[in-house]
Image (cartoon, rainbow, N blue to C red; front, side):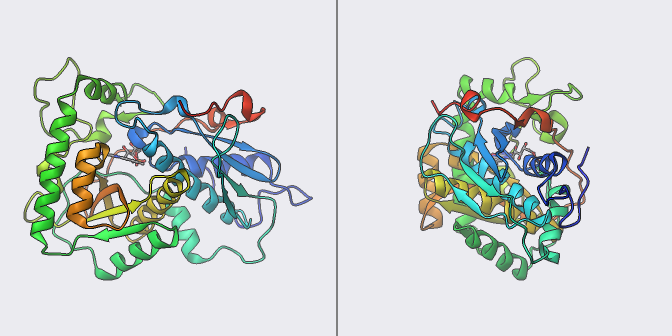
Length: 351
Ligand SMILES: Cc1cc2nc3c(=O)[nH]c(=O)nc-3n(C[C@H](O)[C@H](O)[C@H](O)COP(=O)(O)O)c2cc1C
């Protein structure tokens, strides 16, 4: 169920302090963020003035994400949405990123104690609304082109958060072909690993099983049969070479978000990803993520060379339009992710 949207300045008690309901709403908005395999690797703690965002390292995916890089991207996306919610509650929502890692130390804090005299503007409300509309799509796109004005907005959105967006120029078939080839190689290499397939399977859910995480089969949009499937196996990341661009009439725009690999840069890149996806959603566009291409060090380096990006590849996306409505993915209840006790007792350090 979607939380209600409060007006600015509501959700406070008579002394202006945020009520537990308002904090819970902000956490619910944060938790609608995208995450690798819908692992939702985050926990939150309200310390009386700040909403702390913690990593839940027990939800790291050891095969696909051995360094926790995509876990931090996911937490960055939740951080952006948590701050957006705090702004909607009329708070200043300044973000402080941690510069150390350790048990009980939050990745970031969102300041929630100070009222902002400026009410959130139309653009911020449009992004809040987009939180509940955004879904990862795995459908084919139609022939409608992404307008240059939206591409400019997305580039600005990403640089506002300190990351870099490379948009593959329309008609640059050399670059699209090189990226498609790299994606296909990576896809094949990953699928050849029984460990990868087992992990993917562990995070893919049969229809209606009621689990509050992972990707339901219906959202995965399995189209192709799995070569040599295990019992019950189907494709969750259904895009090899044929999914980057499927030929006319499809007309996606391919883009790469890049940033450095330190903790703060990854959190900023995750924030940039969330802002990009919400700006795109508010404009009616849909996105697929094609991260097989950047999971493995070798293919990631090939992507960097093909795109000549100034930083390290983090997320490869295709953006476009489709009338197909992607199925929603579940979320863990707020009561499971908003912790009330001392963070040292539930937030271990990374392995
Ligand atoms: C860092 C990151 C990497 C992702 N990689 C892929 C991917 O390679 N393929 C894919 O289909 N979805 C990918 N996703 C999307 C997630 O599967 C999706 O966000 C999650 O299932 C929740 O669904 P939703 O985005 O519709 O809310 C990725 C998301 C994140 C944050």
